[in-house]
Amino acid sequence: MSTVADKLAKKSTHKTPAKQVRLRLVYIDFWSAVKLSFLAAVAVAIVTVVSYFLIYLVVSATGLITKLDEFFTSFTDGGTTLSQYIGLPQVMAFAAIVAILNLVVITVLGAVVAGIYNLAVKVTGGLLVGFTSN
Image (cartoon, rainbow, N blue to C red; front, top):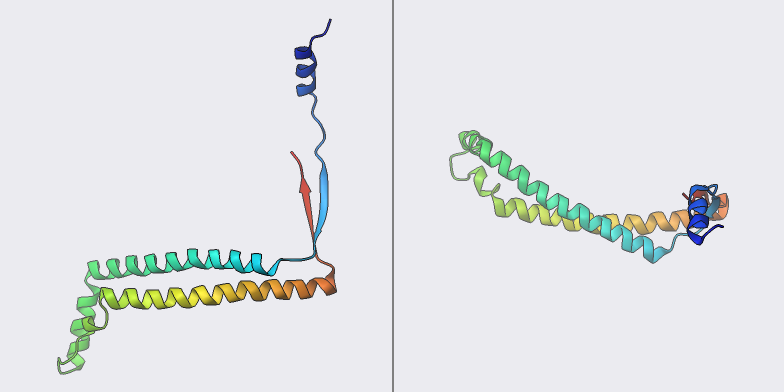
């Protein structure tokens, strides 16, 4: 006299073997690669701006900028100071410019890599990838 619960309990203890599938990657969609590289570039841009800000705070807190300013004014007549050129607004403007340039370069590189891979697939046949189910 077996019930449905007994059958389900027996079934749950029996492990099915994992299935393996081998697939070949023969095409990367150009616009998907551009979107993904743009997303990665945005993350790199945010990290760039934040890291420039933190580095400026550390350098400013240690007093290195004032020491460099004194060293710089010893060579000049005192008409210009280094702190005029290395202030928080200037550093953040430079960080924004670097972040925008990185955004463009990383996005274009993602598109170029996708195009090169799609051309290389015609010669090599693609990348063999294996998957398994648990």
